Length: 309
Ligand SMILES: [Zn+2]
Image (cartoon, rainbow, N blue to C red; front, side):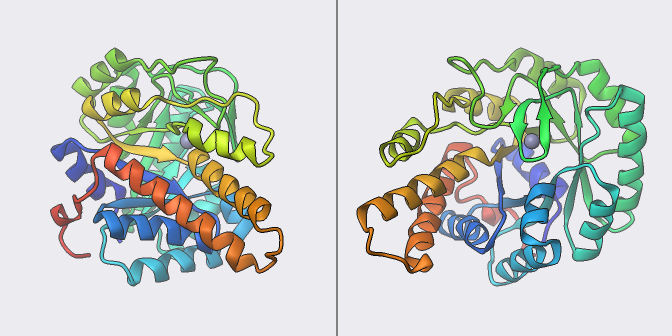
Protein backbone atom coordinates (compact mmCIF):
# COMPACT_ATOMS: atom_id res chain seq x y z
CA UNK A 1 0.00 0.00 0.00
CA UNK A 2 1.07 3.57 -0.63
CA UNK A 3 0.50 6.63 1.54
CA UNK A 4 -1.82 9.39 0.36
CA UNK A 5 1.20 11.68 0.42
CA UNK A 6 2.84 9.53 -2.26
CA UNK A 7 -0.38 8.97 -4.24
CA UNK A 8 -1.32 12.63 -4.21
CA UNK A 9 2.11 14.11 -4.89
CA UNK A 10 2.21 12.24 -8.21
CA UNK A 11 -1.36 13.36 -8.94
CA UNK A 12 -0.49 16.96 -8.05
CA UNK A 13 2.52 16.94 -10.36
CA UNK A 14 0.46 15.46 -13.21
CA UNK A 15 -2.68 17.55 -12.63
CA UNK A 16 -5.29 14.91 -11.93
CA UNK A 17 -7.44 13.99 -8.93
CA UNK A 18 -7.63 10.69 -7.08
CA UNK A 19 -11.01 9.56 -5.81
CA UNK A 20 -11.30 8.54 -2.15
CA UNK A 21 -14.27 6.19 -2.00
CA UNK A 22 -15.92 5.18 1.27
CA UNK A 23 -16.34 1.48 2.04
CA UNK A 24 -18.22 -0.34 4.80
CA UNK A 25 -18.50 -4.02 3.75
CA UNK A 26 -17.16 -6.62 1.32
CA UNK A 27 -19.26 -5.49 -1.64
CA UNK A 28 -18.24 -1.85 -1.35
CA UNK A 29 -14.54 -2.77 -1.20
CA UNK A 30 -14.92 -4.98 -4.25
CA UNK A 31 -16.69 -2.18 -6.15
CA UNK A 32 -13.75 0.14 -5.56
CA UNK A 33 -11.10 -2.42 -6.53
CA UNK A 34 -13.07 -3.57 -9.58
CA UNK A 35 -13.27 0.03 -10.85
CA UNK A 36 -9.60 0.80 -10.17
CA UNK A 37 -8.50 -2.37 -11.99
CA UNK A 38 -10.75 -1.71 -14.98
CA UNK A 39 -9.58 1.91 -15.24
CA UNK A 40 -5.93 1.23 -14.32
CA UNK A 41 -6.35 4.05 -11.82
CA UNK A 42 -4.76 4.85 -8.45
CA UNK A 43 -7.38 4.86 -5.70
CA UNK A 44 -7.92 5.70 -2.02
CA UNK A 45 -10.06 3.28 -0.02
CA UNK A 46 -11.59 5.24 2.84
CA UNK A 47 -13.22 4.07 6.07
CA UNK A 48 -15.01 6.40 8.48
CA UNK A 49 -15.32 5.74 12.20
CA UNK A 50 -18.98 4.96 11.48
CA UNK A 51 -18.04 2.30 8.91
CA UNK A 52 -15.55 0.81 11.36
CA UNK A 53 -18.24 0.64 14.01
CA UNK A 54 -20.64 -1.01 11.54
CA UNK A 55 -18.32 -3.65 10.07
CA UNK A 56 -15.78 -4.19 12.84
CA UNK A 57 -12.36 -2.63 12.47
CA UNK A 58 -10.28 -5.76 12.04
CA UNK A 59 -12.79 -7.36 9.66
CA UNK A 60 -13.03 -4.28 7.43
CA UNK A 61 -9.27 -3.66 7.38
CA UNK A 62 -8.62 -7.29 6.48
CA UNK A 63 -11.13 -7.27 3.61
CA UNK A 64 -9.30 -4.23 2.22
CA UNK A 65 -5.87 -5.79 2.77
CA UNK A 66 -6.78 -9.03 0.99
CA UNK A 67 -8.40 -7.16 -1.90
CA UNK A 68 -5.36 -4.92 -2.24
CA UNK A 69 -2.91 -7.84 -2.15
CA UNK A 70 -4.77 -9.41 -5.05
CA UNK A 71 -4.74 -6.16 -7.02
CA UNK A 72 -1.97 -4.40 -8.94
CA UNK A 73 -3.24 -0.81 -8.78
CA UNK A 74 -1.57 1.77 -6.53
CA UNK A 75 -3.83 2.33 -3.55
CA UNK A 76 -4.03 3.39 0.07
CA UNK A 77 -6.10 2.33 3.06
CA UNK A 78 -7.23 5.57 4.65
CA UNK A 79 -9.07 6.62 7.82
CA UNK A 80 -11.61 9.31 6.90
CA UNK A 81 -12.41 11.96 9.57
CA UNK A 82 -10.49 10.35 12.43
CA UNK A 83 -11.47 11.96 15.72
CA UNK A 84 -10.86 9.24 18.28
CA UNK A 85 -7.19 8.69 19.16
CA UNK A 86 -7.89 5.08 20.16
CA UNK A 87 -9.28 4.33 16.69
CA UNK A 88 -6.25 6.04 15.15
CA UNK A 89 -3.90 3.88 17.25
CA UNK A 90 -5.77 0.78 16.07
CA UNK A 91 -5.50 1.95 12.43
CA UNK A 92 -1.74 2.18 12.86
CA UNK A 93 -1.64 -1.40 14.22
CA UNK A 94 -3.90 -2.69 11.43
CA UNK A 95 -1.64 -1.39 8.68
CA UNK A 96 -3.42 1.72 7.39
CA UNK A 97 -1.18 3.72 5.05
CA UNK A 98 -2.96 7.02 5.60
CA UNK A 99 -4.85 8.71 8.45
CA UNK A 100 -7.03 11.77 8.55
CA UNK A 101 -7.18 13.62 11.84
CA UNK A 102 -10.16 15.93 11.89
CA UNK A 103 -9.86 18.42 14.74
CA UNK A 104 -11.32 21.20 12.59
CA UNK A 105 -14.22 21.71 15.02
CA UNK A 106 -11.77 22.95 17.69
CA UNK A 107 -10.26 26.42 17.68
CA UNK A 108 -7.06 26.98 15.70
CA UNK A 109 -4.46 26.34 18.43
CA UNK A 110 -6.17 23.18 19.67
CA UNK A 111 -6.54 21.88 16.10
CA UNK A 112 -2.77 22.39 15.70
CA UNK A 113 -1.99 20.63 19.00
CA UNK A 114 -4.09 17.53 18.24
CA UNK A 115 -3.00 17.31 14.60
CA UNK A 116 0.67 17.59 15.59
CA UNK A 117 0.26 14.76 18.07
CA UNK A 118 -1.22 12.47 15.37
CA UNK A 119 1.48 13.52 12.88
CA UNK A 120 4.15 12.47 15.41
CA UNK A 121 2.44 9.10 16.02
CA UNK A 122 1.97 8.34 12.30
CA UNK A 123 5.25 9.58 10.83
CA UNK A 124 7.15 7.15 13.06
CA UNK A 125 5.40 4.38 11.12
CA UNK A 126 5.65 5.95 7.66
CA UNK A 127 1.93 6.76 7.58
CA UNK A 128 0.89 10.06 6.01
CA UNK A 129 -1.55 12.42 7.73
CA UNK A 130 -4.38 14.50 6.29
CA UNK A 131 -5.68 17.33 8.46
CA UNK A 132 -8.58 19.75 8.04
CA UNK A 133 -8.79 23.48 8.48
CA UNK A 134 -12.02 25.43 8.13
CA UNK A 135 -15.41 23.75 8.31
CA UNK A 136 -17.06 21.72 5.62
CA UNK A 137 -20.77 21.85 6.31
CA UNK A 138 -23.50 19.24 6.09
CA UNK A 139 -24.12 15.93 7.81
CA UNK A 140 -22.70 12.50 7.03
CA UNK A 141 -21.88 9.58 9.30
CA UNK A 142 -20.48 11.01 12.52
CA UNK A 143 -19.46 14.27 10.89
CA UNK A 144 -21.78 17.21 11.22
CA UNK A 145 -21.36 20.94 11.08
CA UNK A 146 -24.12 23.40 10.42
CA UNK A 147 -22.01 26.42 9.63
CA UNK A 148 -19.47 26.46 6.80
CA UNK A 149 -16.30 28.38 7.68
CA UNK A 150 -14.09 28.72 4.60
CA UNK A 151 -10.34 28.16 4.93
CA UNK A 152 -8.20 31.32 5.10
CA UNK A 153 -5.06 30.96 2.94
CA UNK A 154 -2.68 32.54 5.50
CA UNK A 155 -4.07 30.37 8.29
CA UNK A 156 -3.62 27.29 6.09
CA UNK A 157 0.07 28.07 5.59
CA UNK A 158 0.64 28.68 9.31
CA UNK A 159 -1.27 25.48 10.16
CA UNK A 160 0.74 23.30 7.77
CA UNK A 161 4.04 24.78 8.99
CA UNK A 162 3.09 24.22 12.65
CA UNK A 163 1.75 20.68 12.32
CA UNK A 164 3.87 19.06 9.59
CA UNK A 165 0.74 17.40 8.13
CA UNK A 166 1.20 15.83 4.68
CA UNK A 167 -2.05 16.80 2.96
CA UNK A 168 -4.77 19.32 3.84
CA UNK A 169 -8.56 19.27 3.50
CA UNK A 170 -9.77 22.76 2.68
CA UNK A 171 -13.22 24.29 2.99
CA UNK A 172 -14.04 26.15 -0.23
CA UNK A 173 -17.82 25.80 -0.24
CA UNK A 174 -18.55 22.06 -0.46
CA UNK A 175 -20.74 20.32 2.06
CA UNK A 176 -21.18 16.71 3.26
CA UNK A 177 -24.20 14.56 2.44
CA UNK A 178 -26.78 14.48 -0.34
CA UNK A 179 -28.52 17.80 0.37
CA UNK A 180 -25.77 20.28 -0.31
CA UNK A 181 -27.19 23.27 -2.07
CA UNK A 182 -30.54 24.87 -2.72
CA UNK A 183 -29.64 25.03 -6.39
CA UNK A 184 -26.34 25.02 -8.27
CA UNK A 185 -23.09 24.48 -6.40
CA UNK A 186 -20.69 27.38 -6.11
CA UNK A 187 -17.11 26.66 -5.14
CA UNK A 188 -14.70 29.43 -4.17
CA UNK A 189 -12.03 28.64 -6.77
CA UNK A 190 -10.28 31.99 -6.27
CA UNK A 191 -9.75 31.06 -2.61
CA UNK A 192 -8.44 27.63 -3.62
CA UNK A 193 -5.92 29.31 -5.94
CA UNK A 194 -4.73 31.57 -3.11
CA UNK A 195 -4.29 28.58 -0.81
CA UNK A 196 -2.48 26.63 -3.52
CA UNK A 197 -0.08 29.50 -4.11
CA UNK A 198 1.29 29.48 -0.55
CA UNK A 199 0.58 25.94 0.71
CA UNK A 200 2.84 23.46 -1.03
CA UNK A 201 1.37 20.15 0.18
CA UNK A 202 -1.40 18.29 -1.73
CA UNK A 203 -4.96 19.50 -1.11
CA UNK A 204 -8.19 17.57 -0.53
CA UNK A 205 -11.82 18.26 -1.43
CA UNK A 206 -14.43 16.79 0.94
CA UNK A 207 -18.17 16.73 0.40
CA UNK A 208 -17.66 16.42 -3.35
CA UNK A 209 -20.43 14.02 -4.35
CA UNK A 210 -22.20 15.09 -7.52
CA UNK A 211 -25.57 13.48 -6.63
CA UNK A 212 -26.21 12.32 -10.24
CA UNK A 213 -29.83 13.17 -10.99
CA UNK A 214 -30.32 10.04 -13.16
CA UNK A 215 -29.54 7.89 -10.11
CA UNK A 216 -31.79 10.01 -7.87
CA UNK A 217 -34.62 9.59 -10.41
CA UNK A 218 -34.07 5.82 -10.54
CA UNK A 219 -34.14 5.53 -6.74
CA UNK A 220 -37.31 7.63 -6.60
CA UNK A 221 -38.97 5.60 -9.38
CA UNK A 222 -38.54 2.52 -7.20
CA UNK A 223 -39.87 4.12 -4.04
CA UNK A 224 -37.06 6.13 -2.41
CA UNK A 225 -38.24 9.23 -0.56
CA UNK A 226 -35.43 11.65 -1.22
CA UNK A 227 -36.80 15.17 -1.56
CA UNK A 228 -34.47 17.32 -3.66
CA UNK A 229 -30.86 16.24 -3.13
CA UNK A 230 -28.14 18.25 -4.92
CA UNK A 231 -24.40 17.89 -5.30
CA UNK A 232 -21.29 19.53 -6.67
CA UNK A 233 -21.45 20.07 -10.44
CA UNK A 234 -18.99 18.22 -12.64
CA UNK A 235 -17.62 21.48 -13.98
CA UNK A 236 -16.93 22.72 -10.42
CA UNK A 237 -15.19 19.44 -9.54
CA UNK A 238 -13.02 19.67 -12.64
CA UNK A 239 -12.20 23.33 -11.91
CA UNK A 240 -11.16 22.35 -8.37
CA UNK A 241 -8.83 19.65 -9.73
CA UNK A 242 -7.38 22.05 -12.33
CA UNK A 243 -6.64 24.50 -9.55
CA UNK A 244 -4.84 22.21 -7.17
CA UNK A 245 -7.12 19.56 -5.62
CA UNK A 246 -5.56 16.07 -5.87
CA UNK A 247 -7.97 14.01 -3.69
CA UNK A 248 -11.74 14.06 -4.13
CA UNK A 249 -13.93 12.37 -1.48
CA UNK A 250 -17.02 10.52 -2.67
CA UNK A 251 -19.49 8.80 -0.34
CA UNK A 252 -23.13 9.86 -0.89
CA UNK A 253 -23.04 9.10 -4.63
CA UNK A 254 -22.03 5.49 -3.94
CA UNK A 255 -24.77 5.08 -1.34
CA UNK A 256 -27.37 6.36 -3.81
CA UNK A 257 -26.19 4.03 -6.60
CA UNK A 258 -26.23 1.01 -4.27
CA UNK A 259 -29.66 1.90 -2.94
CA UNK A 260 -31.20 2.59 -6.37
CA UNK A 261 -29.95 -0.73 -7.72
CA UNK A 262 -31.30 -2.76 -4.79
CA UNK A 263 -34.69 -1.06 -5.09
CA UNK A 264 -34.83 -1.82 -8.80
CA UNK A 265 -33.91 -5.51 -8.45
CA UNK A 266 -36.47 -6.05 -5.69
CA UNK A 267 -39.19 -4.25 -7.69
CA UNK A 268 -38.42 -5.95 -11.01
CA UNK A 269 -37.90 -9.46 -9.65
CA UNK A 270 -40.02 -9.87 -6.54
CA UNK A 271 -39.47 -13.64 -6.67
CA UNK A 272 -35.77 -13.23 -5.81
CA UNK A 273 -34.70 -13.74 -2.22
CA UNK A 274 -31.07 -14.77 -2.63
CA UNK A 275 -29.10 -11.80 -1.18
CA UNK A 276 -26.31 -12.43 -3.68
CA UNK A 277 -28.68 -11.73 -6.55
CA UNK A 278 -29.72 -8.50 -4.88
CA UNK A 279 -26.30 -7.27 -3.75
CA UNK A 280 -24.38 -8.42 -6.84
CA UNK A 281 -26.04 -5.97 -9.26
CA UNK A 282 -25.69 -3.19 -6.66
CA UNK A 283 -21.97 -3.93 -6.44
CA UNK A 284 -21.72 -3.64 -10.26
CA UNK A 285 -23.65 -0.34 -10.31
CA UNK A 286 -21.29 1.16 -7.76
CA UNK A 287 -18.28 -0.11 -9.75
CA UNK A 288 -19.66 1.57 -12.90
CA UNK A 289 -20.20 4.84 -11.06
CA UNK A 290 -16.66 4.80 -9.64
CA UNK A 291 -15.26 4.18 -13.13
CA UNK A 292 -17.19 7.22 -14.33
CA UNK A 293 -15.71 9.30 -11.48
CA UNK A 294 -12.18 8.13 -12.27
CA UNK A 295 -12.58 9.35 -15.85
CA UNK A 296 -14.01 12.65 -14.58
CA UNK A 297 -11.11 13.15 -12.13
CA UNK A 298 -8.53 12.24 -14.79
CA UNK A 299 -7.03 9.33 -12.82
CA UNK A 300 -7.99 6.66 -15.40
CA UNK A 301 -4.92 5.09 -16.94
CA UNK A 302 -2.56 6.77 -14.45
CA UNK A 303 -1.52 3.66 -12.49
CA UNK A 304 1.63 3.41 -14.64
CA UNK A 305 2.99 6.58 -13.00
CA UNK A 306 3.55 4.62 -9.80
CA UNK A 307 6.13 1.91 -9.20
CA UNK A 308 4.81 -1.51 -8.24
CA UNK A 309 3.93 -1.53 -4.59
ZN1 LIG B 1 -15.40 14.64 4.71
